[in-house]
Image (cartoon, rainbow, N blue to C red; front, side, top):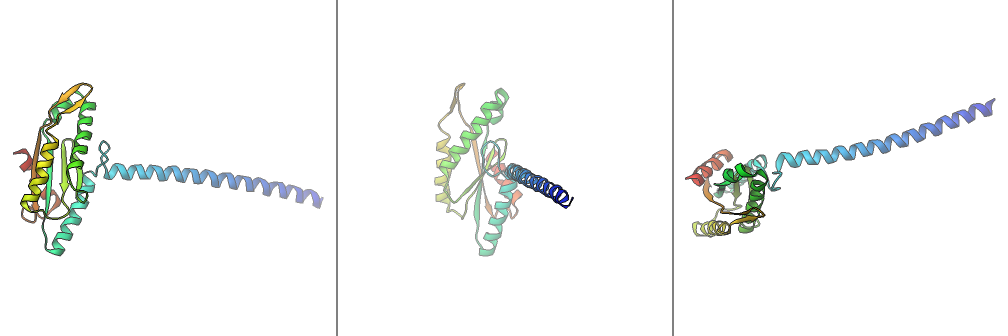
Length: 193
């Protein structure tokens, strides 16, 4: 009788151990999936899905940090916007082609700025460049000329070629604004004129 009770107790303990191991493995798998989903949500919250560049939420944080640094060191910095002026014309014909145009434009912009500067996509047809330090007028003109020259070449895909029309505007902290939105809006206004 004692042997029977010990035998059943042992069987129950083995079953509980197996269930516990199974449950722990399942929970680890669920936790890993949840972690992957969290990373996707974070990426969607701070990065553009087409270009993988920082988005408006992210660039606002970067500009605020740049403003704090410039204020602390009594420096200025430059911010520029680049608008693809004929984006909506392309988008009317083909959304897929418009996305390819934006991706190609982001690659062109990345190739024309310095490594220490930050490029961000802030709207359907707009990009912001935050220059890490203030550039003298002639140095910034070199970069802006480089940006213009990379857009001289037409965008080409299997449907043909499209001339890319751009507008560039720049804004200087603190002369034009002391707020991230103010700097961006001032540069956008200048890009559209």
